[in-house]
Every structure is written in C-alpha cells, then in structure tokens.
Length: 109
Ligand SMILES: [Zn+2]
Image (cartoon, rainbow, N blue to C red):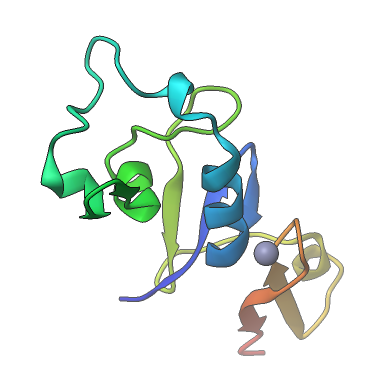
C-alpha cells in the first residue's frame, strides 16, 4: 500500500502541495494550546528547531483550513472523477493545485 496523495479542503493534493500548504500554516495556529504538542518533544522535530511537517500532519496537529485532519490517500482506495461517468475507458486523479497525476484508472470493459 502506497500513499498517492492527500485530501484536505475538500479536494485531492500531491505530497509537494500538501507540504507547501503545511509550511504556510502559522505555528501559532497549532502550538502552545491544550492538546497541542510539546515543542520540546524531539518526536516533532527533524533536528533541534526544525519541525517535521509531515509528522505534524500525520498526527492531525496541522489541519486544513476548516480544521479537519489531512488524510493520506492510498493506491488501494477508490476515488471518483467526472471523466469516469462520461463513459471513458480511462480516468485520472490529479492534484487540484498543480495538476500532477496522482492515479490513473482504466476500465476492465
Ligand atoms: Zn500538487
């Protein structure tokens, strides 16, 4: 099972765009309050003073703009795209920010 992308803000995104998003979330949005990580905790750092954004996302500390968790999408998951319903033999799932193709579906028929 492999992670092909992420869902947040009601859309699919590639890993690069997800990390760009996470980087722009102000630390004050997730640090220092109840239920928030102890920033002395090495678990949340790559090295002293350098936060591991992927780990903060994985632990639902950095969330999307609506406060929801950012979820990984696995290659074993089903996804839907409008072009599947249009009778096409193939359909693609793309990053809603940059257009990178995350997955391709091919009809068995
Ligand atoms: Zn992207």
